[in-house]
Image 1 (cartoon, rainbow, N blue to C red):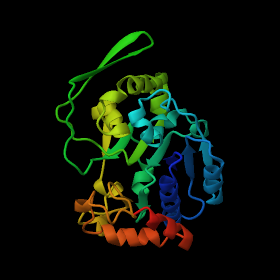
Image 2: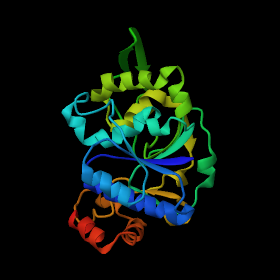
Image 3: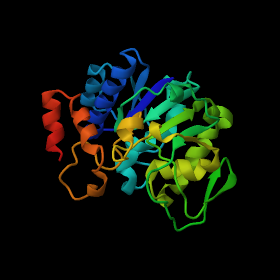
Image 4: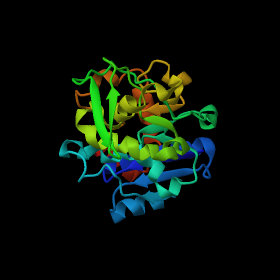
Length: 274
């Protein structure tokens, strides 16, 4: 199964993606199938990805700066995962494993790579439930009106790691149905791409075991975690009061392992973001 990362022009997420792939290759070798989907066109980003020997897909997203409100422009890179079924370089893939760039691969995850969920598989979000001020979301697609009812409150699945069934999403053009919903309801969401996936697919999401999306602040992260997700504070976020309550348990241990995979120049740059 191909493992897919998505980035935009933010240099921090480019750095995170580099380390993610380096940690992945330590477990599965240099030939592990990966793809980086890039929603921008900066030559320096393209050069950096190619220098890392990561196959690159240049993609023009449906959810872009001209189609979503300005408040969500910072999340264009995160929204890319919603459109993987349309990426030409993935046209022959039945299932792919999407991973946020702030994943550190700590242990092998062969069972996850063998999974074939009917729609998608995600692990539960390690946070409080989300509340929202609407009970239904409406959208129009191909001249038909649709309604998506919302639970209240909703315990969400984390979109940091998603095993996508791309074949199912392409069937009957389901992906464009979903994107029509996204475009017409993005202003209602509380947690970006994660909310859009949870609200639309709901009970069709297969639940993943916690080790496949494990924050470093979880007490058993070092012993049971496979895919360590720097959910909240990133490895360089050690000074600000924000996220202080999440820099606990194994955060600093995994932060050190993350920095070990950087060159001296890369580590100096990452520390400057603190």
